[in-house]
Length: 221
Ligand SMILES: [Zn+2]
Image 1 (cartoon, rainbow, N blue to C red):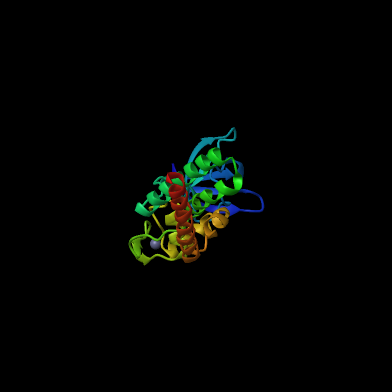
Image 2: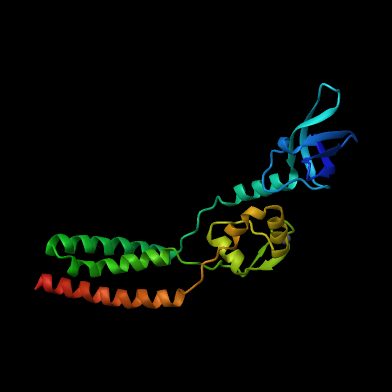
């Protein structure tokens, strides 16, 4: 049954739901099935009710609509994996080649010092694979209100974590208010440092490449 919380005594932990057909139904906090926050007057709810031994209507399970919707939103969004571009495949190739060379050099020379250098590109490739990426489009449509909004650090970060349905800032603030416990997960943000890492990988690749070349030349001669 659908209804709306018409009375709520937060200190006592009980209140009343006015059902769609106008009946007043008693409910206690223990019958609440949604998590995240306590009930508030005006919340729309879905509930089941039964009559108690004094013939009064009593709700046996109460779900606050805005909280069930928020949970659904969360479940449905963490589905699409992070997309890989060609640069990622180069990185994966670098990673594998680097590890193979490290292992091969180690087995051949039996010396950690001379083989460890081939492992450096692998480490850098790993770091870069976990980097923050930018979406192709500069703006997105809010899933909730359909407004077009430009990407900012929060939405880019969410996009990087595989979210495909994004909320605009206004809807996000609204969502946070309904889900206060989620705040710490959503404000976490990796900072760029992309240029520095890029310089590092180019430098190391050149150096690593030179070492490999040197090694091949020496093996052949
Ligand atoms: Zn919105």
